[in-house]
Amino acid sequence: MHNLVFINNNSLTEYDVDRIIEMAWEDRTPFEAINFQFGLTEKDFIDLMRGEMKPSSFRMWRQRVQGRKTKHNKLKTFVMGRFKSTQQRTINQNKISKR
Image (cartoon, rainbow, N blue to C red; front, side, top):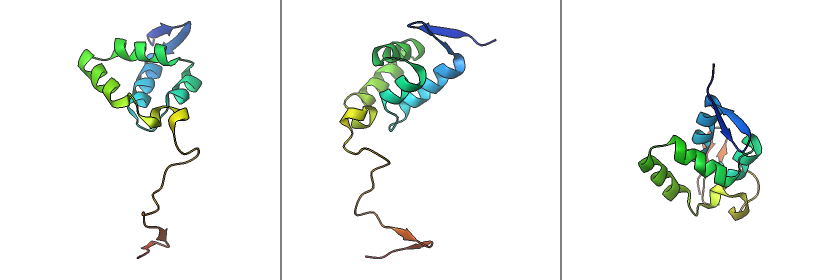
């Protein structure tokens, strides 16, 4: 049987906790996506991370995500998809175009 973690009346399985931690380390996954999928506020989410990680790992993660535009939907400069530089080469029929 799976162990359950309770946060704000939300019961999370070990799999859920592992997935939340994985999403937290992903640069392009915003906190809003975690809130939508698991119903955790940012504070609950940070408390979960603090409780599940070693103190040094938690500090490293916090330094990494603090102020990152990609972790908050409101701070992103683009709305949909991924940013693509205008300097990036386009690929047409398996041939890279030349400038």
